[in-house]
Image (cartoon, rainbow, N blue to C red; front, side):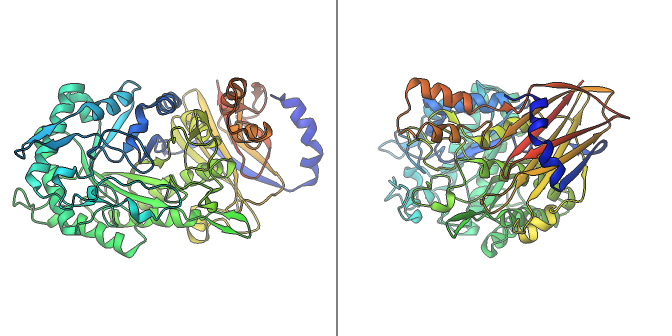
Length: 555
């Protein structure tokens, strides 16, 4: 770790010769609470939850946040023996005996949820997918997809509507009742329950009307078991798509004015609204080119649709999957456009895109509660194989350190200004494709601290000179302790450390220890007390392309 004085000596001539980007943070100008919309994570494979690296990563995720982290997983009602595999999971929660009578087994679901609760985390309890004994097309049921296979191979018997809606509703009722008995009413009241995943595509092999019918049965069952439980949906794919928009509006129309399939009355319960938003990277002349604009347009369209329903626009919104692209289990080997995932492109994209989610919610005046990063870990896979994950073989990737930074940002968001190349509107329209990079900041102030996250992001992962960023922070006391954290090629980066080792396929114990240390969030230089002038401090940063800094002031 370098000293601040040494860094200033190294960069003094650079600062004198290059133009600077000036950012002003006014900590006296509040923009509202710094909601922890980032403290939400999810993944396809529920059985990884209680495996060795899964438990290790969940512990780290829980520790980085001062508020409970919410976790969303698929396949909680899928039939099977609990064996983990890519894009697959099972719990065997529901089977039937020889006479067709229900047999409930909560052992694996309890093991999953216990792992969360023990760490102070909260489930987003996804009601799905269809148990084999209730599926209207039960065969084939278990898939064996792997990277490189046709993605459509995953959609088997678990994706179909039930043969008996009442039996499925009873399953849900029993699950909620069991959860209350095991964890207590107050705990389960803090969860979210939801029906299915992406029912506008092949995850749901029924019609929109059949999904709505199932929702009515499920919502009724949840509320009968626990009237104060929170239920929501529909978790559609990106709302820019015509089918997604149509499905989303059809669902919300039913919530407001439709005839309930269970009660016969108007409408259905809805406590939270969910949809997905993804970017779209591609390989251009051998270089990964991201497309943050696509993801922001998805988010904005979803907000626009929700805001058009006066009776619903106040409800909390969860972007149930919010990522640079769509397939976490599609490795870099078979999908070279996903080569951004191991290094700092993923981390800088995350910093920049989350800041714009706040802006879009402010602009549409909607209640954004959370944005789920659909990334976890893939147990016992090759090191740095290029999955969309937060850690590999128990070693944290650079992106996880952005969430550690977010975890230190408390209080209210405060105003950031300057002559900056990009804002949320420009990125939404055209992504980050110009000659200049997206160099900007997100800032917050609490009673005894102020934090400023600064990034240097570009959609093209091409080499570029580091940027000179001059950050002026106003509204500080006469003195404050500055801690400067950094994620770049040199700091908080286990991937670069692994490459410097020669990219070992099987690192030894000493190498693993070194990689674990490299994967933690690191200070750029030693903490330093600074004196302010009229409540203002100026920090000059040499910020590499795809680098992220967090300036934390405490007093």
